[in-house]
Image 1 (tube, helix red, strand yellow):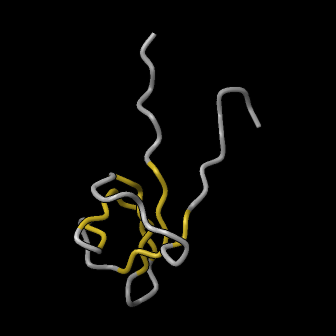
Image 2: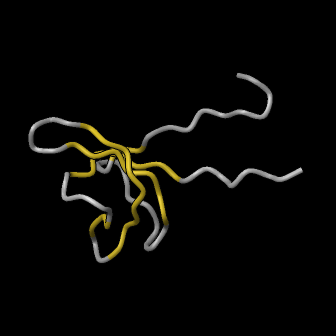
Length: 68
């Protein structure tokens, strides 16, 4: 690993869900098999995001960059 970098891992929705209202990256899969990455959040027992595709995985958002 390079200094100052870490590997972020996708979390399967079968493993666990994010905290209620927490913004996360979501990996989706459409009916035709297309994959996409979007930003969304978990609320009311479902993912809220721009599309209608099924969310298969998620990961926490990285921190904002630190300005020097």
